[in-house]
Length: 198
Length: 245
Ligand SMILES: [Zn+2]
Image (cartoon, rainbow over the protein chains, first blue to last red):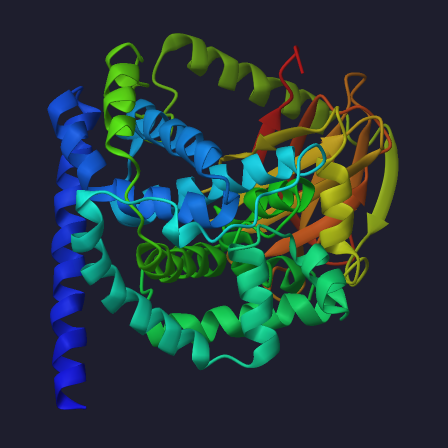
Protein backbone atom coordinates (compact mmCIF):
# COMPACT_ATOMS: atom_id res chain seq x y z
CA UNK A 1 0.00 0.00 0.00
CA UNK A 2 2.76 2.42 0.94
CA UNK A 3 4.62 1.67 -2.27
CA UNK A 4 1.47 2.10 -4.28
CA UNK A 5 0.72 5.42 -2.68
CA UNK A 6 4.19 6.83 -3.23
CA UNK A 7 4.04 5.65 -6.81
CA UNK A 8 0.78 7.47 -7.29
CA UNK A 9 2.15 10.58 -5.67
CA UNK A 10 5.27 10.55 -7.78
CA UNK A 11 3.22 10.00 -10.84
CA UNK A 12 0.91 12.88 -10.00
CA UNK A 13 3.98 15.14 -9.75
CA UNK A 14 5.16 14.01 -13.13
CA UNK A 15 1.76 14.74 -14.65
CA UNK A 16 1.87 18.27 -13.26
CA UNK A 17 5.40 18.75 -14.52
CA UNK A 18 4.37 17.45 -17.91
CA UNK A 19 1.47 19.87 -17.90
CA UNK A 20 3.74 22.80 -17.27
CA UNK A 21 5.95 21.77 -20.17
CA UNK A 22 2.95 21.53 -22.48
CA UNK A 23 1.51 24.83 -21.28
CA UNK A 24 4.84 26.58 -21.72
CA UNK A 25 5.33 25.16 -25.21
CA UNK A 26 1.78 26.10 -26.18
CA UNK A 27 2.31 29.70 -25.08
CA UNK A 28 5.42 29.92 -27.25
CA UNK A 29 3.63 28.25 -30.14
CA UNK A 30 0.93 30.91 -29.79
CA UNK A 31 3.57 33.48 -30.65
CA UNK A 32 4.41 31.63 -33.84
CA UNK A 33 7.28 29.47 -32.55
CA UNK A 34 7.23 26.38 -34.78
CA UNK A 35 10.00 24.56 -32.94
CA UNK A 36 8.08 24.97 -29.67
CA UNK A 37 5.11 23.45 -31.46
CA UNK A 38 7.29 20.52 -32.54
CA UNK A 39 8.07 19.99 -28.85
CA UNK A 40 4.38 20.22 -28.03
CA UNK A 41 3.69 17.54 -30.62
CA UNK A 42 6.23 15.23 -28.94
CA UNK A 43 4.64 15.94 -25.58
CA UNK A 44 0.98 15.50 -26.49
CA UNK A 45 0.77 13.37 -29.63
CA UNK A 46 0.73 9.98 -27.84
CA UNK A 47 -2.32 11.06 -25.83
CA UNK A 48 -4.06 12.82 -28.73
CA UNK A 49 -3.47 9.95 -31.14
CA UNK A 50 -4.38 7.42 -28.45
CA UNK A 51 -7.76 8.91 -27.66
CA UNK A 52 -8.56 9.48 -31.34
CA UNK A 53 -7.58 5.91 -32.21
CA UNK A 54 -9.68 4.54 -29.37
CA UNK A 55 -12.77 6.34 -30.65
CA UNK A 56 -12.24 6.22 -34.42
CA UNK A 57 -10.55 2.77 -34.48
CA UNK A 58 -9.43 2.90 -38.08
CA UNK A 59 -5.66 3.70 -37.97
CA UNK A 60 -5.62 5.67 -41.24
CA UNK A 61 -8.54 7.84 -40.13
CA UNK A 62 -7.04 8.21 -36.67
CA UNK A 63 -3.91 9.65 -38.26
CA UNK A 64 -5.96 12.10 -40.31
CA UNK A 65 -7.92 13.27 -37.28
CA UNK A 66 -4.75 13.57 -35.18
CA UNK A 67 -3.26 15.74 -37.91
CA UNK A 68 -6.41 17.91 -37.94
CA UNK A 69 -6.28 18.27 -34.17
CA UNK A 70 -2.69 19.48 -34.16
CA UNK A 71 -3.25 21.94 -36.99
CA UNK A 72 -6.22 23.28 -35.03
CA UNK A 73 -4.10 23.50 -31.86
CA UNK A 74 -1.61 25.55 -33.87
CA UNK A 75 -4.30 27.85 -35.25
CA UNK A 76 -5.87 28.40 -31.85
CA UNK A 77 -2.66 28.42 -29.78
CA UNK A 78 -2.81 32.17 -29.08
CA UNK A 79 -6.30 31.73 -27.67
CA UNK A 80 -5.29 29.14 -25.11
CA UNK A 81 -6.52 30.30 -21.72
CA UNK A 82 -4.68 28.65 -18.85
CA UNK A 83 -7.43 29.67 -16.42
CA UNK A 84 -9.84 27.34 -18.22
CA UNK A 85 -7.78 24.21 -17.69
CA UNK A 86 -4.37 22.86 -18.59
CA UNK A 87 -2.89 22.60 -22.08
CA UNK A 88 -3.08 18.82 -21.81
CA UNK A 89 -6.75 18.99 -20.90
CA UNK A 90 -7.42 21.39 -23.77
CA UNK A 91 -5.76 19.03 -26.23
CA UNK A 92 -7.58 15.98 -24.84
CA UNK A 93 -10.91 17.79 -25.12
CA UNK A 94 -10.25 18.88 -28.69
CA UNK A 95 -8.98 15.42 -29.68
CA UNK A 96 -12.05 13.69 -28.32
CA UNK A 97 -14.41 16.23 -29.88
CA UNK A 98 -12.81 15.85 -33.33
CA UNK A 99 -12.81 12.06 -33.03
CA UNK A 100 -16.50 12.15 -32.16
CA UNK A 101 -17.21 14.49 -35.06
CA UNK A 102 -15.47 12.05 -37.40
CA UNK A 103 -17.30 9.02 -36.05
CA UNK A 104 -20.71 10.69 -36.22
CA UNK A 105 -20.21 11.96 -39.75
CA UNK A 106 -18.86 8.61 -40.91
CA UNK A 107 -21.38 6.51 -39.08
CA UNK A 108 -24.03 6.52 -41.75
CA UNK A 109 -21.73 5.69 -44.62
CA UNK A 110 -19.07 3.39 -43.30
CA UNK A 111 -18.73 0.65 -40.74
CA UNK A 112 -16.01 1.15 -38.28
CA UNK A 113 -13.23 -1.37 -38.13
CA UNK A 114 -13.24 -3.26 -34.92
CA UNK A 115 -9.67 -4.37 -34.68
CA UNK A 116 -7.96 -3.72 -31.40
CA UNK A 117 -6.57 -0.23 -31.46
CA UNK A 118 -3.83 -0.82 -28.93
CA UNK A 119 -1.78 -2.95 -31.36
CA UNK A 120 -2.16 -0.66 -34.32
CA UNK A 121 1.11 1.20 -33.94
CA UNK A 122 4.63 0.11 -33.13
CA UNK A 123 7.70 2.22 -33.14
CA UNK A 124 10.65 3.12 -30.96
CA UNK A 125 8.64 5.47 -28.74
CA UNK A 126 6.11 2.84 -27.91
CA UNK A 127 8.12 1.12 -25.20
CA UNK A 128 8.70 4.33 -23.26
CA UNK A 129 5.13 5.41 -23.68
CA UNK A 130 3.88 2.02 -22.58
CA UNK A 131 5.74 2.21 -19.28
CA UNK A 132 4.16 5.58 -18.52
CA UNK A 133 0.84 4.53 -19.89
CA UNK A 134 0.72 1.34 -17.83
CA UNK A 135 0.78 3.40 -14.62
CA UNK A 136 -2.03 5.58 -15.99
CA UNK A 137 -3.87 2.51 -17.14
CA UNK A 138 -3.67 0.89 -13.72
CA UNK A 139 -5.07 4.01 -12.08
CA UNK A 140 -7.82 4.40 -14.63
CA UNK A 141 -8.71 0.72 -14.48
CA UNK A 142 -8.87 0.89 -10.71
CA UNK A 143 -11.01 4.03 -10.87
CA UNK A 144 -13.38 2.53 -13.42
CA UNK A 145 -13.70 -0.55 -11.22
CA UNK A 146 -15.19 1.67 -8.51
CA UNK A 147 -18.20 2.43 -10.70
CA UNK A 148 -21.33 0.36 -10.79
CA UNK A 149 -21.75 -1.75 -13.92
CA UNK A 150 -24.28 0.57 -15.48
CA UNK A 151 -22.28 3.69 -14.60
CA UNK A 152 -19.15 2.20 -16.16
CA UNK A 153 -20.93 0.96 -19.25
CA UNK A 154 -22.65 4.30 -19.76
CA UNK A 155 -19.43 6.31 -19.40
CA UNK A 156 -17.46 3.93 -21.63
CA UNK A 157 -20.10 3.79 -24.34
CA UNK A 158 -20.21 7.56 -24.37
CA UNK A 159 -16.50 8.33 -24.19
CA UNK A 160 -14.91 5.40 -26.01
CA UNK A 161 -17.88 4.48 -28.17
CA UNK A 162 -18.71 8.03 -29.18
CA UNK A 163 -22.43 7.57 -28.50
CA UNK A 164 -24.78 10.24 -27.25
CA UNK A 165 -26.48 9.49 -23.96
CA UNK A 166 -29.72 8.88 -25.87
CA UNK A 167 -27.96 6.24 -27.95
CA UNK A 168 -26.45 4.80 -24.80
CA UNK A 169 -29.95 4.51 -23.36
CA UNK A 170 -31.04 2.48 -26.38
CA UNK A 171 -27.91 0.32 -26.24
CA UNK A 172 -28.39 -0.43 -22.54
CA UNK A 173 -32.17 -0.69 -22.78
CA UNK A 174 -32.79 1.83 -20.00
CA UNK A 175 -34.55 5.18 -19.82
CA UNK A 176 -32.74 8.30 -21.05
CA UNK A 177 -33.13 9.96 -17.66
CA UNK A 178 -31.52 6.94 -16.02
CA UNK A 179 -28.54 7.09 -18.35
CA UNK A 180 -28.16 10.81 -17.78
CA UNK A 181 -27.96 10.36 -14.03
CA UNK A 182 -25.76 7.24 -14.25
CA UNK A 183 -23.31 9.16 -16.42
CA UNK A 184 -23.32 11.99 -13.94
CA UNK A 185 -22.93 9.74 -10.90
CA UNK A 186 -20.19 7.80 -12.67
CA UNK A 187 -18.30 10.93 -13.63
CA UNK A 188 -18.48 12.30 -10.08
CA UNK A 189 -17.07 9.01 -8.80
CA UNK A 190 -14.33 9.01 -11.44
CA UNK A 191 -13.47 12.57 -10.57
CA UNK A 192 -13.14 11.62 -6.90
CA UNK A 193 -10.89 8.70 -7.83
CA UNK A 194 -8.73 10.33 -10.49
CA UNK A 195 -8.84 13.95 -9.47
CA UNK A 196 -10.20 16.71 -11.58
CA UNK A 197 -10.14 19.86 -9.57
CA UNK A 198 -10.07 22.63 -12.10
CA UNK B 1 -36.29 24.05 -10.81
CA UNK B 2 -36.02 25.01 -14.44
CA UNK B 3 -32.23 24.94 -14.63
CA UNK B 4 -31.73 21.56 -12.99
CA UNK B 5 -32.01 19.76 -16.33
CA UNK B 6 -29.25 21.82 -17.84
CA UNK B 7 -27.03 21.65 -14.75
CA UNK B 8 -27.28 17.88 -15.00
CA UNK B 9 -25.96 17.83 -18.53
CA UNK B 10 -22.42 18.91 -17.57
CA UNK B 11 -21.08 15.35 -17.28
CA UNK B 12 -22.61 14.23 -20.58
CA UNK B 13 -21.30 17.42 -22.19
CA UNK B 14 -17.76 16.74 -20.95
CA UNK B 15 -18.03 13.27 -22.51
CA UNK B 16 -19.26 14.76 -25.82
CA UNK B 17 -22.41 12.69 -25.29
CA UNK B 18 -24.93 15.39 -26.20
CA UNK B 19 -26.41 15.69 -29.65
CA UNK B 20 -25.70 18.95 -31.44
CA UNK B 21 -28.90 20.67 -30.30
CA UNK B 22 -28.41 19.88 -26.65
CA UNK B 23 -24.76 20.81 -26.99
CA UNK B 24 -25.79 24.24 -28.28
CA UNK B 25 -28.34 24.68 -25.52
CA UNK B 26 -25.85 23.67 -22.87
CA UNK B 27 -23.15 25.94 -24.27
CA UNK B 28 -25.56 28.86 -24.15
CA UNK B 29 -26.01 28.11 -20.47
CA UNK B 30 -22.73 26.96 -19.00
CA UNK B 31 -20.38 29.83 -19.74
CA UNK B 32 -22.40 32.00 -17.42
CA UNK B 33 -23.20 29.33 -14.83
CA UNK B 34 -20.50 29.00 -12.18
CA UNK B 35 -21.65 25.53 -11.17
CA UNK B 36 -21.63 24.06 -14.65
CA UNK B 37 -18.38 25.72 -15.67
CA UNK B 38 -16.58 24.32 -12.64
CA UNK B 39 -18.16 20.90 -13.30
CA UNK B 40 -17.10 20.86 -16.92
CA UNK B 41 -13.51 21.86 -16.10
CA UNK B 42 -13.27 19.18 -13.43
CA UNK B 43 -14.84 16.47 -15.58
CA UNK B 44 -12.52 17.38 -18.46
CA UNK B 45 -9.52 17.08 -16.16
CA UNK B 46 -10.81 13.71 -15.08
CA UNK B 47 -11.16 12.52 -18.66
CA UNK B 48 -7.67 13.85 -19.41
CA UNK B 49 -6.37 11.16 -17.06
CA UNK B 50 -8.38 8.60 -19.01
CA UNK B 51 -7.10 10.03 -22.30
CA UNK B 52 -3.51 9.85 -21.05
CA UNK B 53 -4.00 6.20 -20.18
CA UNK B 54 -4.81 5.51 -23.82
CA UNK B 55 -1.51 6.96 -25.09
CA UNK B 56 -0.43 5.46 -28.41
CA UNK B 57 2.25 7.35 -30.36
CA UNK B 58 1.37 8.08 -33.97
CA UNK B 59 3.75 6.95 -36.75
CA UNK B 60 6.80 9.26 -36.96
CA UNK B 61 5.80 10.42 -40.45
CA UNK B 62 2.80 12.20 -38.97
CA UNK B 63 4.97 14.74 -37.18
CA UNK B 64 6.58 15.78 -40.48
CA UNK B 65 3.18 16.23 -42.09
CA UNK B 66 1.88 18.29 -39.16
CA UNK B 67 4.96 20.52 -39.15
CA UNK B 68 4.66 21.00 -42.91
CA UNK B 69 0.99 21.92 -42.46
CA UNK B 70 1.49 24.47 -39.72
CA UNK B 71 4.31 26.17 -41.64
CA UNK B 72 1.66 27.29 -44.14
CA UNK B 73 -1.24 27.76 -41.68
CA UNK B 74 -2.07 31.18 -40.36
CA UNK B 75 -2.69 31.44 -36.63
CA UNK B 76 -5.70 33.22 -35.17
CA UNK B 77 -5.08 36.35 -33.13
CA UNK B 78 -5.51 36.09 -29.40
CA UNK B 79 -9.06 36.55 -28.19
CA UNK B 80 -9.34 39.99 -26.68
CA UNK B 81 -10.72 40.40 -23.23
CA UNK B 82 -14.44 41.06 -23.03
CA UNK B 83 -15.19 43.76 -25.59
CA UNK B 84 -15.27 47.19 -24.04
CA UNK B 85 -16.98 49.75 -26.26
CA UNK B 86 -14.17 52.28 -26.29
CA UNK B 87 -14.32 53.28 -29.93
CA UNK B 88 -16.60 55.97 -31.22
CA UNK B 89 -18.73 53.60 -33.25
CA UNK B 90 -19.54 51.41 -30.29
CA UNK B 91 -20.24 54.44 -28.15
CA UNK B 92 -22.66 55.82 -30.70
CA UNK B 93 -24.34 52.46 -31.16
CA UNK B 94 -24.85 52.22 -27.43
CA UNK B 95 -26.27 55.71 -27.21
CA UNK B 96 -28.64 54.90 -30.05
CA UNK B 97 -29.85 51.71 -28.45
CA UNK B 98 -30.50 53.48 -25.19
CA UNK B 99 -32.28 56.25 -27.02
CA UNK B 100 -34.60 53.82 -28.72
CA UNK B 101 -35.39 52.00 -25.53
CA UNK B 102 -36.01 55.15 -23.59
CA UNK B 103 -38.24 56.53 -26.33
CA UNK B 104 -40.09 53.26 -26.30
CA UNK B 105 -40.29 53.35 -22.53
CA UNK B 106 -42.03 56.72 -22.75
CA UNK B 107 -44.60 55.16 -25.04
CA UNK B 108 -45.08 52.13 -22.85
CA UNK B 109 -48.46 53.22 -21.64
CA UNK B 110 -49.76 53.19 -25.20
CA UNK B 111 -49.69 49.54 -26.18
CA UNK B 112 -49.00 46.59 -24.02
CA UNK B 113 -49.10 43.56 -26.25
CA UNK B 114 -49.01 41.02 -23.54
CA UNK B 115 -48.66 40.77 -19.81
CA UNK B 116 -47.67 37.29 -18.97
CA UNK B 117 -46.50 35.88 -15.71
CA UNK B 118 -44.33 32.85 -16.23
CA UNK B 119 -43.33 32.01 -12.72
CA UNK B 120 -43.51 28.29 -12.12
CA UNK B 121 -44.23 27.28 -15.69
CA UNK B 122 -42.28 25.20 -18.16
CA UNK B 123 -39.97 23.68 -15.59
CA UNK B 124 -40.26 20.12 -16.83
CA UNK B 125 -39.68 20.84 -20.47
CA UNK B 126 -37.24 23.74 -20.22
CA UNK B 127 -34.17 21.90 -21.52
CA UNK B 128 -36.07 20.30 -24.39
CA UNK B 129 -37.78 23.59 -25.29
CA UNK B 130 -34.47 25.42 -25.22
CA UNK B 131 -32.85 22.78 -27.41
CA UNK B 132 -35.74 23.06 -29.86
CA UNK B 133 -35.37 26.83 -29.92
CA UNK B 134 -31.61 26.64 -30.52
CA UNK B 135 -32.35 24.30 -33.39
CA UNK B 136 -34.29 26.94 -35.33
CA UNK B 137 -32.46 28.25 -38.38
CA UNK B 138 -33.39 31.84 -37.55
CA UNK B 139 -32.44 31.74 -33.89
CA UNK B 140 -30.69 34.86 -32.64
CA UNK B 141 -28.82 35.47 -29.45
CA UNK B 142 -28.00 38.70 -27.62
CA UNK B 143 -26.25 39.46 -24.37
CA UNK B 144 -27.96 42.34 -22.65
CA UNK B 145 -25.72 45.17 -21.62
CA UNK B 146 -25.63 45.66 -17.89
CA UNK B 147 -26.66 49.27 -17.18
CA UNK B 148 -27.04 48.78 -13.48
CA UNK B 149 -24.37 48.91 -10.85
CA UNK B 150 -25.48 45.45 -9.89
CA UNK B 151 -23.93 42.08 -10.68
CA UNK B 152 -25.40 39.60 -13.09
CA UNK B 153 -26.02 39.07 -16.77
CA UNK B 154 -28.93 38.36 -19.06
CA UNK B 155 -28.84 36.61 -22.39
CA UNK B 156 -31.84 36.22 -24.67
CA UNK B 157 -32.28 33.75 -27.52
CA UNK B 158 -35.28 33.95 -29.78
CA UNK B 159 -36.70 32.71 -33.02
CA UNK B 160 -39.17 34.97 -34.86
CA UNK B 161 -40.37 32.00 -36.91
CA UNK B 162 -41.06 29.90 -33.83
CA UNK B 163 -42.41 32.87 -31.88
CA UNK B 164 -40.50 31.81 -28.81
CA UNK B 165 -37.70 33.17 -26.73
CA UNK B 166 -35.54 31.95 -23.91
CA UNK B 167 -34.13 34.20 -21.26
CA UNK B 168 -31.14 33.22 -19.18
CA UNK B 169 -30.15 35.39 -16.24
CA UNK B 170 -27.15 34.44 -14.14
CA UNK B 171 -25.53 35.59 -10.93
CA UNK B 172 -28.28 38.09 -10.22
CA UNK B 173 -28.98 39.84 -7.00
CA UNK B 174 -32.30 38.44 -5.79
CA UNK B 175 -35.10 40.98 -6.12
CA UNK B 176 -36.23 42.51 -2.85
CA UNK B 177 -39.42 41.19 -1.20
CA UNK B 178 -42.27 42.47 -3.34
CA UNK B 179 -40.30 42.95 -6.57
CA UNK B 180 -39.47 40.86 -9.59
CA UNK B 181 -37.37 41.19 -12.71
CA UNK B 182 -39.42 42.09 -15.76
CA UNK B 183 -38.49 41.68 -19.38
CA UNK B 184 -39.68 44.11 -22.04
CA UNK B 185 -39.84 43.14 -25.67
CA UNK B 186 -39.80 46.35 -27.66
CA UNK B 187 -40.94 46.31 -31.29
CA UNK B 188 -40.14 48.78 -34.10
CA UNK B 189 -43.54 50.46 -33.69
CA UNK B 190 -42.71 50.77 -30.00
CA UNK B 191 -45.40 48.52 -28.76
CA UNK B 192 -44.31 46.34 -25.92
CA UNK B 193 -44.63 42.90 -24.60
CA UNK B 194 -43.92 42.51 -20.94
CA UNK B 195 -43.05 39.44 -18.96
CA UNK B 196 -42.94 39.14 -15.23
CA UNK B 197 -40.00 36.92 -14.50
CA UNK B 198 -39.24 35.85 -11.01
CA UNK B 199 -37.34 37.32 -8.11
CA UNK B 200 -34.26 35.23 -8.93
CA UNK B 201 -34.08 33.94 -5.38
CA UNK B 202 -31.21 31.63 -6.32
CA UNK B 203 -29.56 34.23 -8.56
CA UNK B 204 -30.80 32.57 -11.74
CA UNK B 205 -33.66 33.15 -14.12
CA UNK B 206 -34.23 30.56 -16.84
CA UNK B 207 -37.46 30.99 -18.76
CA UNK B 208 -39.05 30.04 -22.05
CA UNK B 209 -41.34 32.80 -23.28
CA UNK B 210 -43.71 33.40 -26.13
CA UNK B 211 -42.33 36.13 -28.36
CA UNK B 212 -45.40 37.37 -30.21
CA UNK B 213 -43.65 40.15 -32.12
CA UNK B 214 -40.36 40.80 -33.85
CA UNK B 215 -38.22 42.64 -31.31
CA UNK B 216 -36.11 45.69 -32.00
CA UNK B 217 -34.79 45.73 -28.45
CA UNK B 218 -34.95 43.83 -25.17
CA UNK B 219 -34.77 45.44 -21.77
CA UNK B 220 -35.01 44.41 -18.13
CA UNK B 221 -36.37 46.49 -15.28
CA UNK B 222 -37.28 45.78 -11.69
CA UNK B 223 -41.02 46.04 -11.02
CA UNK B 224 -43.65 45.09 -8.46
CA UNK B 225 -43.98 41.33 -8.26
CA UNK B 226 -47.56 41.34 -9.53
CA UNK B 227 -46.38 42.99 -12.75
CA UNK B 228 -46.47 46.52 -14.08
CA UNK B 229 -48.05 47.64 -17.34
CA UNK B 230 -45.81 50.67 -17.30
CA UNK B 231 -42.12 50.46 -16.61
CA UNK B 232 -41.50 52.27 -13.37
CA UNK B 233 -37.98 51.09 -12.66
CA UNK B 234 -34.68 52.07 -14.22
CA UNK B 235 -33.56 50.04 -17.21
CA UNK B 236 -31.10 47.58 -15.74
CA UNK B 237 -30.19 45.54 -18.79
CA UNK B 238 -30.71 46.40 -22.43
CA UNK B 239 -29.83 45.25 -25.92
CA UNK B 240 -30.85 46.57 -29.29
CA UNK B 241 -31.35 44.00 -32.02
CA UNK B 242 -28.84 44.75 -34.80
CA UNK B 243 -30.58 45.90 -37.97
CA UNK B 244 -28.99 43.13 -40.02
CA UNK B 245 -30.22 40.38 -37.72
ZN1 LIG C 1 -25.69 25.34 -14.75
